[in-house]
Image 1: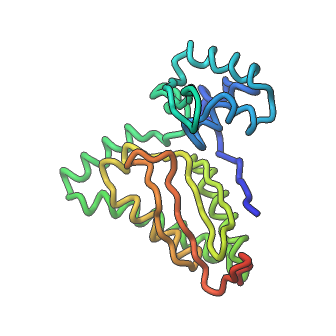
Image 2: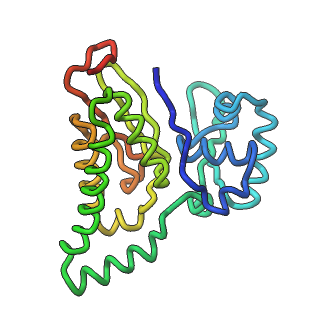
Length: 229
């Protein structure tokens, strides 16, 4: 059974201003977009009319956009996604300032020096978590890693699949940095592999236009039932 880690750490002031159903709609669109009013109503267990009311308000604030999609037989339907303004509501960890600093460092000391900063960050995090997770089950390790990543602004959750797991990061807290320095993403993948003690394969990538960064996690000793040592 899949488990969602809803914690995101401290939300930005802009996102915190959108409470209740409006905030939930924004979060669901961030996790999986595009979504129709019917999709959102089913996920949030409210009426489609209530969803449409809030969608109109969010569209008026230019936080979402929509397009027509053909889904099966029948007339096209409207599917909604976050606009650039809506995406900006989610944590980015001072990415513009950080990107500028790294680019200046790369110019003065070389690109490898800039990238090494992130490698050292993940190495420190690996040491902390390796000691903390010693002796716990595979699921507990994955749950703790998802929690730590969520607190850093990555909106991470995980699900068990047949003999494997899927770890999803629905927000990239340092997207501008990752676009300029893709080595950072490689460092994250290596971090996950080391701290989880598992084979890790990235399946989707936010910087390539996907809705999330998704990793397939395979622990040694997992049974087809999903039970792992």
